[in-house]
Image 1 (cartoon, rainbow, N blue to C red):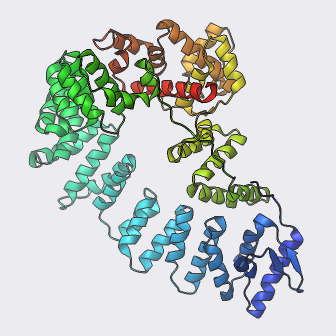
Image 2: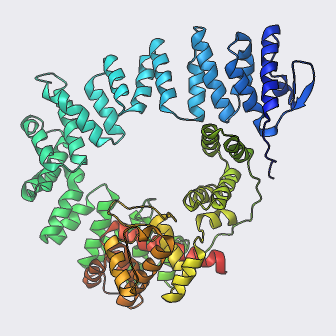
Length: 597
C-alpha cells in the first residue's frame, strides 16, 4: 500500500520552532505527539495544526537539534529508538549532548553505527573509547578505519606494534597499503626482535601483489635460519616460480607436502610429467587441486582414481560441486556402475546439466507472494523532494540494511521503476536466496532493453533469451560497466572486437559507442552468432569462445577430454570459463521456464 506523500509548509516549521521555544521556557515535554501516537502539534497560542505525515518526526528532530536545553534529552531518547534516519540523527545528537555534559556517549555512537556506517562517527567512537581507557576496543575501531592515515597515527600513538598493524592490513587484504606501511619500518628495524614478523608480512604483501622479484629479495635473508616456517617457504617458492626458476621452486613445494601440492602439480603438468602431476594434485587439501588431479587421471585413462575424487567433490558445497557431480555421473554410466540416482537427482536441479544429460530439469514450485511497499521508501522520496538529499541517502541505506523479504521485493520494484536494472537484479537475487517467489525471479532475471534485444535476436537468428542470459551474466544489465581487461557495456564487448564488428556490419564506430545499449546489444549478438557458426551451433563451445576466446576452444576441443560434446565442458581448463558456460545456460533455461512456460 502506498502512503500519500506530503510536504511541510513554511508556516508549520515556524509554528514548530515557536513551540520548541515555548516548551523550553516552561520546561515541559516537547514531543507528546510521538509518545502518544498523535499527529497534531500544539502551537504557542494553544491552537493545533495537523502535522505533515512522513515529515513529522524529522521536522520535530530539526527543532530539537536547534534546542540545546537539557530538557530535550528525553525527547531525543524517544526518537533514538527508531530504526531509520531519524533514529540515526537522534543518536548522534544524544552523543553530542552526552559529551557536552561529560557523560558516556559511547552507547549512542554504537547505536548510530549499527544503523549507518560513516568514518566520521567511527572515529568519534574510537576516540571516546580511548578517552575512557578502553584501548582494545578503540584499537578494533581504528583497525576498521585502515588504511586511513589518521587511523595509522592513532594506532601508533597507542603504541600498537607495527607488526600488529601490518597483520590488520593483511587480514583485510589491503596488500598495497600493507607493503607501503611495512617498508619504512623494515628499513630502520635493525636487529629488533620483531623484524622477522615484519619481513614475513612484507614478503607476503609483495607476493599477493605479484611482485615476485621483490618477494625473493625480501625473503632471501630469512631462508637459511627459518626453513621450518611453511608460510615463509611457500612464498619463497612462489617468488622463485614467478621469476622463472621452476626447478628451485619445485624443491620448495616438494618439501611442503600438501601445502605446496597445487603449485608443484602445475609445474609438473607443464613439464609433461602428467602421472606424477596427477598424484601430486590429488594429495592436496585444496578442492581446486583435487579437481585438476581428477581431470588428469581421467585423461590418463585411470577412471577409478578420477571417479573417487569426483564423488568426494560432488558432496562438498563449492564451485566444483556440480562439475564433479556431472563428471562422476558420466564416468559411472560409462563404467556400468549403478547407484547414480543421488547424482542425477542433484543434477536435475541444475537445468544446464540436466540438458547436457538429455534429462528433464526439476523446477521448484514458486509461490506468488503479496507484499507492500515499506514506508521507508516513501520517506526516501519525501526527503529528496523536500531538499533533504543526505537524509534520504541515510534513510535508504538503513532501510536496505534492515530489509526483510517483502522489503527486498519492494526495493527491486522501486529500482526497476527508475530503470536502475543493476540495483533491481541485486535485490531480486537477495530475495530469491531468502524465499523464492515469482516476483523474486522476475527481478533477478529481468528483460531490459527489450526492443533492442528482440531486434538483434531477429537480425542474427538468436533466441532473445540467450541474449538476456549473456547480458545478465556479463554485466548484470549495467550499460556503462568496464571489466578489468577493458571489455565494455551490457554484453562486455572488447573495443577492438567492436571495431571489427562495425567494419563487418558496415556501420560507423567511435570510441564510446559500446556504451550505447542498442549498439552493445547488437554487436554482442553478432559476435555470439559468429561463435555459434564457427563451432557448428554447439552452444557450450560458442559460449566458451565468447568468454575464453575461440583459440582456446579449439585447443580444448582437441584435448583427450574435449573431443565429444558430452566431455567438452570438463576439458575447459579455465575455471572462469567453465563456470561461465554453465551460468549462462542455467540462466537461459530459467528465462524460458519463467516467461515461456
